[in-house]
Image 1 (cartoon, rainbow, N blue to C red):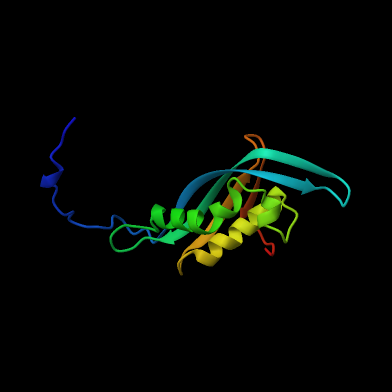
Image 2 (spheres, rainbow, N blue to C red):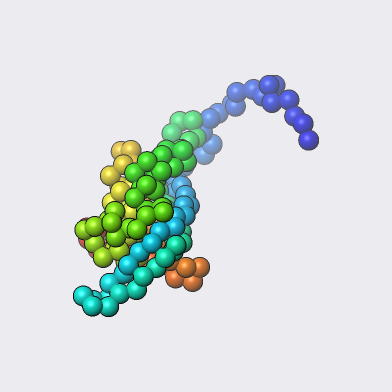
Length: 146
């Protein structure tokens, strides 16, 4: 199929409907080595462990019908987060914590929160350790994050 895109006209309106905010979802994967401590003497080593991150960001829709750009979310992830996780022994990059999925999820939340543009908010973050197991942080839950 070939269409001549050069003939496309400006739309009659850029924003459709009255939607003020929308949730934008992004997915990421990283592989890391990790030692998880269950107490001072018991631990489990995870080698080449694959994690899957899903993040939902509430974003205003602008006059052109656009929310936060996926490229902006990717830039936050690949500039500030990915280098500390992917291919790393994360005990050496996240040294202040026991590197459980729960703690990593809280750290991810804080990293995105710190770098998101004003007016954009994280609604939900899910970090999956396996296809069957994940932890979820949800902005509707009433708890304090580190």
